[in-house]
Image 1 (cartoon, rainbow, N blue to C red):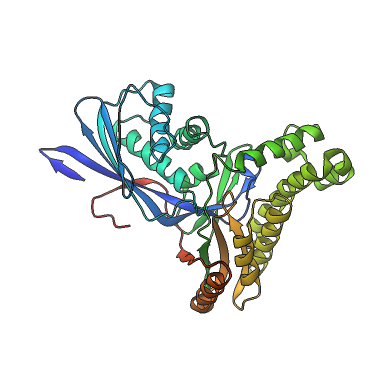
Image 2: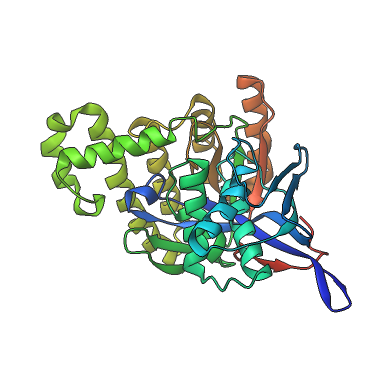
Length: 374
């Protein structure tokens, strides 16, 4: 930060992306999830200016400016930042005045690593600190989610914003999204590592199938006569298969079975049994691809190729789907070879140069100084 005459002119904040070890499409279904904040970030700087004009800039994008009193959705990258301002005005009646806000990031967009939530959380943490709003952690992630739900228009669950706020280095977070109870689970990978393969097939969630899947899962619950998937077990599903119909049966089957996999994964991670964790990752992908139908040819190809390789414990698509990334749990000593083979075969099959990166755990959103490097 820059300090002139005791006045801070510019301040810097970061928010991490996340991987979700397991528990996909369960957060908005009041289920269990197991996210991990990762060492890829959105870096946001904020500087107060005179007047009421708010200026937003981000590398490689057209700058956006608007008056504080006229926050309007425009369907572009700035909506994630505007949404946070809109929520805080709606909830708190906050008057911000003029600001200059700049975004930088090494978090790939559309890759299933929750770049949008990182932007929202970086923004709300920056405003909370800069304007002394005194929001607690729950308000930070709840308001950030409200920005995406009600302003941007993506009906996401709370997991992504929660992980960006609550992440801890060397920990996964077991979160019950119904009761919002959570506990930190040790994540000591030892001889293993998490690799992420970005398929470079990217989705637009507000226009794609994400909201459709959410509605289908809700409809299946309605047919079952239940108010929550936490009241549904496999015993409830099988006798009602014909009443549900094949589509709604498969949507419900994924949610119920994925919740079971999360609970089993927590036990497995507590014992550092990463071969068994890999088995559950593969089961999760099969369910996401066949029952929830949110995978695609490219991510299926990556997972199927990884499954046959030495040193790979397991793999699955991560994020909302319809593209995005694959998470793989691999032995460190085989990492280089695994990456080389996947990149080569993927290029041969699809003509796309995919990206890959090792991800490590991180703390949640926080203020940093101007020397912070992405």
